[in-house]
View 1 (cartoon, rainbow, N blue to C red):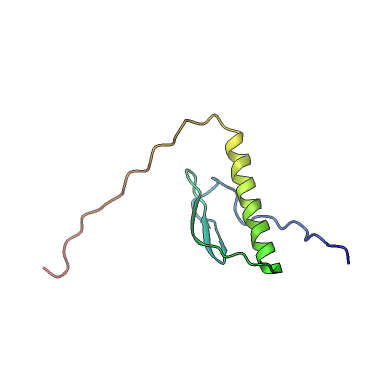
View 2: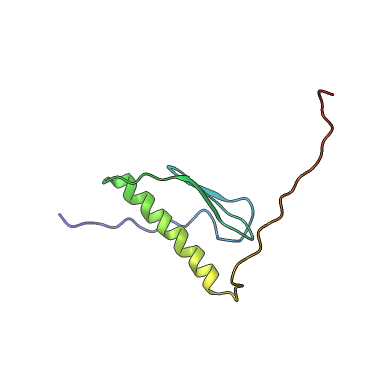
Length: 93
């Protein structure tokens, strides 16, 4: 039986385009940002169709990130964002 490939599904996010889009694959979350794309969590891939679909989606997301970065003049390393802290009055005092 010949193997068939699944038609490409457009990604739910365009890397670095906004600070709102996110994609979840298993327990792995990809969060979009205008300065950074964050990946956190875990992704278990087994020998099954669902894992193949997740792996293809992850590859598409990473390919889109690489394509977005390749088209830019990049510094050696981007500066880390400063921690945003705000003092609030202690509600128990």
